[in-house]
Amino acid sequence: MTKLYAKIPEGPLSEKWSKHKASLKLVNPANKKKIDIIVVGTGLAGASAASSLGEMGYNVKSFCYQDTPRRAHSVAAQGGINAAKNYKNDGDSVYRLFNDMLKGGDFRAREANVYRAAEVSNDVIDHYIALGVPFARDYSGYLDNRSFGGVQVSRTFYAKGQTGQQCILGTYSSLLRQVSKGMVTMFPRRDVLDIVVIDGKARGIITRNLITGEIERHSAHAVVLATGGYGTVYYLSTLAVNSNASAAWAAYKKGAFFGNPSFIQIHPTSIPVLNEFQSKLTLMSESLRNDGRVWVPKTKGDKRIPKDIPEEERDYYLERRYPAFGNLVPRDVASRAAKERCDAGYGVGASGLSVYLDFKDAIKKQGKKAIENKYGNLFEMYEKICGENPYETPMKIYPAGHYTMGGLWVDYNLMTTVTGLYAIGEANFSDHGANRLGASSLMQCSGDGYFILPYTISDYLAGEIRTNKIPVNTPEFEECEKNAKEKIQRILSVNGKQTPAIFHKKLGKIMWDYSGMVRNEEGLKKAIVLLDELKEEFWKDIKISGTANELNQQLEKGLRVADFIELSKLICLDALNRKESCGAHFREESQTENGEARRQDDLYAYVAAWEYTGDDNDPIMHKEELKFENVELKERSYK
Image 1 (cartoon, helix red, strand yellow):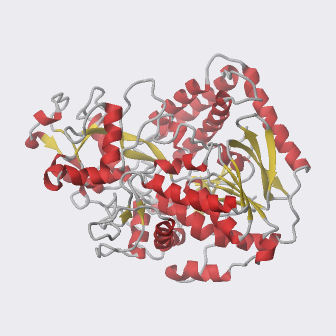
Image 2 (image 1 turned 45 degrees about the vertical axis):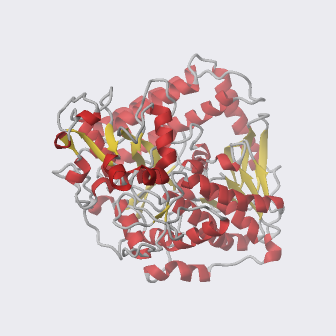
Image 3 (image 1 turned 135 degrees about the horizontal axis):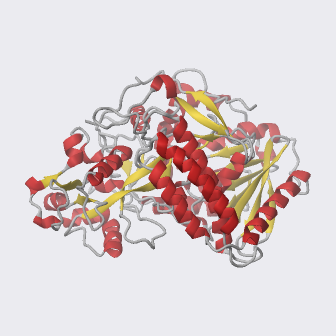
């Protein structure tokens, strides 16, 4: 049985990373030329890792399912990226960023990993400036900052409402530099079907060429997964419709433990569901809560238009409940508060499943031009989708599936429980606990790729310098390719009546109803039964048009939905096992008198790492105990 060993360095928290770096083994330049590394994913984590490793002299193979790395989902991040620069002189520091992240995650993350993420955040900003990312600047020309949920300082760097896009363009430029130098080879339009493990080490991947349908073998001395999260398990989410968990799920089935799979963030400011034909939802950045005020009418079922509801008849419920943080409480708190108001009958809009986000006071105080400079593209997007002008009438918002704090379990070096297999960015579980603070995603992805993985992977590769190039004609490659082809043939041969989208929609409803913002034992047990029934129905009635040897988006979708159904059961098992409430995981049986999450530190201060034991067997849960030596474990309060 695999044992969990987190490899957290000894010593004071502030010195762990610097001392650890100094102790890591190195690979000399001549030997780097002999080493191959596969990086799957070209978002901020994957592209930064591939470009950094290429710059160091390794031979990198970079894979993505898009036609260009620029379409990776990091492009959709809007509000900003955190760093502890303290440019506003408001008391920020690396320790405060660390403490805010740990508290925001409801004390369910490793201290050492969180502190390291905060520590390298300043390097990330400096690097992006060097790459030419056009962060917003104030009148004097200095870099500007704004605040985000769950903090009381302004540490978020931003590029209007398109920070992710600008960062991905900067990272893409550094990636293409390595492509032009021959250090990185790009493999676009590829889906990863399996991870190849030889003698206990990750040695390659099996991919499907999405244009031709060809099944390909690719080998390397190490494999890095930077494949993002699995929020699309809810069907309707803020993620790109093709975002998926299949590469991570393949790794799980090859021995990589899955950490805290039930920790899924629901974002409080999404455009609500408009009709039953939607396949995704659209995020409205958390940064809008800097200037927008969230409210509902004080009267149940009030159908008046917003401008006809006077101030004294409006309930600014976040400001009322959480005066210290107001509208900038963490995402899990804001989401549950919106749900509670709507469930109680105070919701707005035709469905009653919306609350208002109002910019009237901010426009009156700062002027329309100032608000446009900060959020213009977001207001434009909202008006295009909803047909209402946010400068004149409040936005309608409601929570939606967004980010996954859970992911592949990794040690301090970002290696999974499969030797030589790494997971970075949102694909791993390590930095955000049970709830991610806004603008920390880009920070973690970039930090992992640019400033952490390049050090830690070299420590492993120093032991691989005598290993020749990995051949792809081994029995392990042949077995993985055979299994991949059989799965494709199996799904094509069902020839049922229901499309992948129909099954995905059914799956999303089960997960949203029973494992969404609020969970309980009865609902989770019911969800597990429904998921077993859905899996059985899927393999009896799935309809995939076309063939395997061509561009076939139905086939792509079908394979991903099959994995989602299996992953969903693991999510529910994890949620059922964790009987406490913490962060985004809210168990109705464990709440305070005021309806807030109530942790049970004596029972659940651990990472749940799940081990695959076969399709017909229950997974085994391993515990990594969380130790808190630098912060006090206490109930979160944003009042």
